[in-house]
Length: 324
View 1: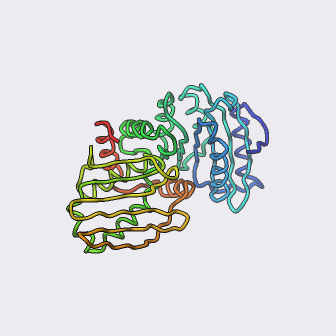
View 2: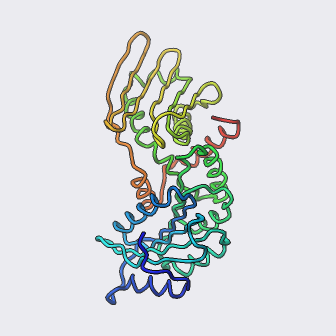
View 3: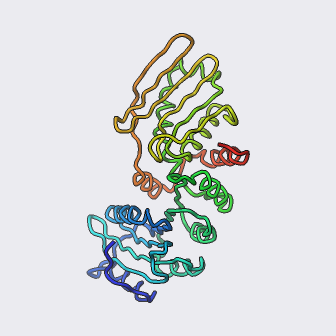
């Protein structure tokens, strides 16, 4: 991200941002204040590219908080305008080792009043829970992603703890939004009364996924809709396939087995149903969602599925007994 210059004075930063917003003497509409936090150096460029993608599409004041050791503490770079149809401003702070209250004070000074504040949190919350809580209390919504690393189970536990701390506004987990295309395939397949009639006998679940967070959410959702616990030996989750993607799902029982293989490049889900001695095969449309589409969905709606809190409670219960 090219910077227009390094500025350390908050009043000067505010002046620069306000001038960019009111260029030519005309104040521009701003859709939101987008607060973006990252503390993972290997994802910093990825995050910056997607932040600029949002800025080009929606008029936004973006404050990028760099919690990595690469960001100089308490310095800021201002990029007054991101072009395209929308006009946005970006200010970037290095905040490593800054107190949460200091960061909050910066945001209070630099966000546009009476415009929604959205938090997009990238990275682990280990060691910075207080900063997350300080930022998330003002956000509607706070967006996180528990998936994508070998620590995604630990990340899920943290997210659940943070959701409890935030009360009525739990963070939106992109890992949960990411299983939506899989949910649609399963729901569409079992619209067939012949398949739905055998669901009562399903007592085992297998899921292969490149990250376990998506597998854990899918297990919780299936448990809810089928009224099963799928705990202990009743489920098997394996880390296989592309990161942040579900590769395979198998539902089985004494009288049936339903296997779904998700082929993302072909945009196809291959379903095989074995009922008694009969086997049926079908190809169903499968359209996965990229991370930026999920972020935009969360940014624009600020909402998540009505049963999300219930799913979180199921996940919390399963993780508390040592699952997966």
